[in-house]
Length: 570
Image 1 (cartoon, helix red, strand yellow):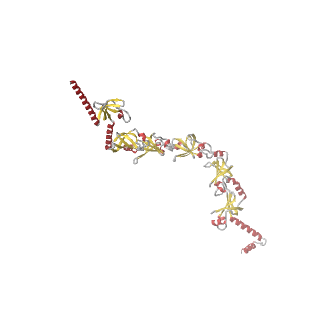
Image 2 (cartoon, one colour):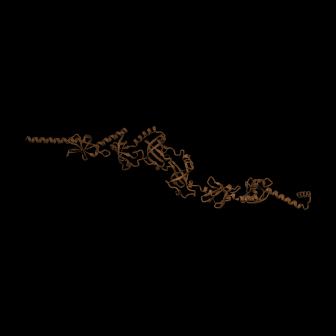
Image 3 (cartoon, helix red, strand yellow):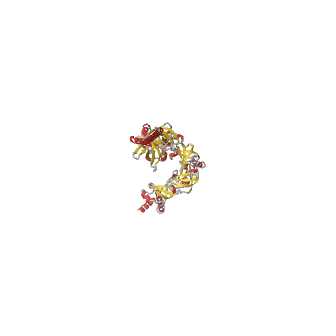
């Protein structure tokens, strides 16, 4: 009987103990946070001693950090909350995630209330592509416009990265909010910019990184600001596009050219670090200097040749060869080719150098003159006539020129009064030297010297000459004696009476032929002066002589002659 009582008593104690344990577990489930210690790690389970008769089981994944690493070990303290009670097995399922959410939301709220920063990790791009989901302890939204100061071109490049944020909007009911990274960056930039402008000055050399390249230049980050490196300040040599010299993320040392604090702008230079190669250019590349240089670029009108870094010259298409204009520049030069050239013009003020290729050889006109002499008569083809001169092709690539004053010994209005284009003519070489444009000096009037000599030999003052009116001027009448001989009648030699220019112009029409008296000549200057007055006087004298001869047959005395003349006059 006693044994039965003892057995019943033991059974009652066990039932009471189980009831107490179940009550204890149920009480823990209802509590908030429990401090525990990791006592074991088995596979994906972390065993946590929470100070009770049974341990808590925690999923290992809840202890992974943002990079997915498990950094805990046995003996570490951990705060958890009971999620479920396994009565049959006698253990608790605990969670740290819910503790972290509560703690995270508390930190987010504090950051919002205190306008302070909070760390977070960008988890992914939102479904609508307008922003990001961020784990900041609580899940928050980061708009795309608040992710950076600049426009985010590749959103996926930010996924997985940790940054500090500011909470700009909060919804406690839904436990959500909106973050901004841009505000922090702008505040930092403003502070850095103030420090930069306080110390930066023009002429400083600073290090930077190329962040963006545009057609007009490159932007270089020098700390708190992106300065503009204009393409004209990249190199002393020609830069058609900044990409020819720079790449994004290039590290550079640049010179500060100007600072605009009001508009937060800085202008930078790369070439200004070095001495201008155009300094003392006259001594380095004097006119006539020959050198080897590199062809950098070809265009329709020539090629650009690099003499040294920052110094380019133009080889014009007309200076490639003496054999006329080439069909294309590429017939003679190619990009990248190293070739000999000669400096033929230099303008340091405008930074221009003109180069020549054909100048390396003797001019064909000079070769021509080695085989011809002054006074020699040669044949040529009239190529072009302008108001003041005529261009004559003597040989292929050899051209001569006749000035208008060397066409006739008298003044003419236009060369085409005597010469026509595409006409073959004989001309005389009148100088052993070329003119300033390297043309052979020619004369046309010199071929007709014999006609003048013959005229002077066969005519003397007082002789009658037939003329044709060419033009009436304010000083007299220009007359054609022959194609290459011209005479002139002064207004005072037209009539005994004083005649005006208007009267002479009305009376003597161009092309009208007359007979006049040769009054005087100037053999040296090839001048012939004529007179109507002298002709009239001569005719009057001849008439008087004829009259006197006819009257002498009946009148035998001088007195009779005068008396007869007076009677006739009456």
